[in-house]
Image (tube, rainbow, N blue to C red; front, side, top):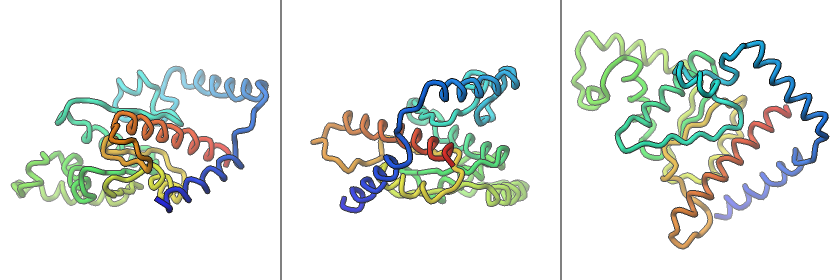
Length: 220
């Protein structure tokens, strides 16, 4: 708790020093027009980072800076598989550094799922070892591809937003952060068992983290 509070205090000092001042609307208008001009040149195409899912990119124009995106669905509907596909595509096709925080599965389990996806194998086959002999070549190829990607995996259980920020600050040009999953995160505050309020606070801090990280990258 002391470490987390100290980290938060230092972060607040840096944040207050680096930004937060009011800006004349003239400058904001110039920035906005610059974005509009870039978007018009691309004529409706992806202005953010492409996800690899064409329909999703059409709706969102890619993943935009400072976005906090929550993916919700019933259990075993493929949420983890979906975000891992996003991470692999962005790291491979776009060469974007990606950080994955896995609070449910170990690093090895995450990588195993990524290998199975890349090699077109079911996760059950990877778990049970029932792999056809001809598929080992695909597994070797998938492992080689994944080992070259700019992806970093952390499987600290119950990680807090403050601890996450501390780790992310050491990464340069970070393009995407994946958290699997939100409900397993912890807070340094005491909410007397009110998990709804705690999750709301964690979500709010994650949005602040995304916004501040984008502002910091843009300033540099």
